[in-house]
Image 1 (cartoon, rainbow, N blue to C red):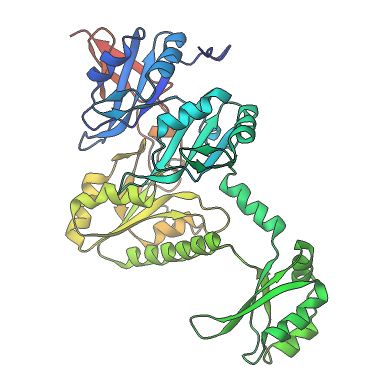
Image 2 (image 1 turned 90 degrees about the vertical axis):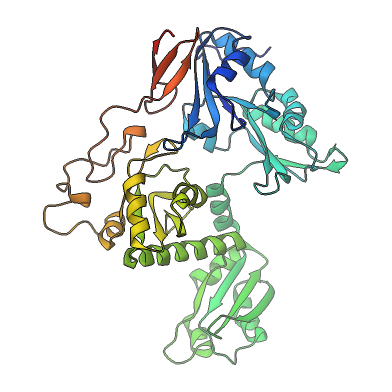
Length: 451
């Protein structure tokens, strides 16, 4: 058995992939066989009380938690294998790339247990998951394994990359976080996007002028939606590409461009980056539409991991939902800005959604819902509030800071929540208790009563 981490005993487990009808009592019956259980909480929707498909199990002893993780991982409950991981107090550990690998070209038959068994020989695994299609429930052909140590990940790559798993040769490599991939592209690019030249300019003309800065591999001339010409030009080296951008001779612009026009030369975005830029522009347009619509709602205090689909799922129960959008950073890597907009077809439905969803818990945060107004988006963009001494939602401006501290967080101009919600949970010994939900499940306190 792998020992618990010395000096830092962990007694809390995350249990995922639960069937919808799995209860605290059922989980207690399963986990108590390993050792004394302190508390169990199945996480549920704050309004419907429907299970969200995961739970937290807290043991009295760290050794029992470790044994449960080893012996019950992928144990079937109601026909569905559960997935057990350590509760990770620091979200940055999950997001960083250390010890994280990606496995591509997986056979459709390889599931979570098979992937875990294949890679557990190299070291302690924090998490392991095959990506599944939500609609078909079939494997997407790739998965992730997050090792506790970078050395284990390195060994797994060396041993498994190029091997056959279930008859298919798999590709195993270190997982590079998205932000690092973008920075890598910026530091190694060779492709340029060129705009602003005259219609009669040919690929040969561009090749001739740009060859002054280095060897040109290819030039592709195209037209945009407005029927204006532009081109992609690929150099052999990154140095040549940066030199063309930094030291472009303006005299060439006079030959390539119409009078008064300027040549635009910049790094060509990757396909993924272009798609992301398009999504950001669409999101901005939607925000403006929501502000001008009778059915538009502003949704604030969103957790960083809330997606468009999660926002849509939370609001579509009211009917007539036209769109839901989480606003992300305009520049750089895609990152939630903590607010979004939803748009309904009529004002009455929007008002009902506003009343019922304001203070609704979504991904561990109490969201703020109000009618979409231009000043709300401006406040997030740095425009501030009107100079009338009042902040958002009628609160005195600056009366409360934007707390941003876990479940009790308040949006700008709103008071922080007083205390924490206390949903019921199943206690050790069969009693009913209540769970005071602090900033994370790891600092929660249980208050129990004997049944």
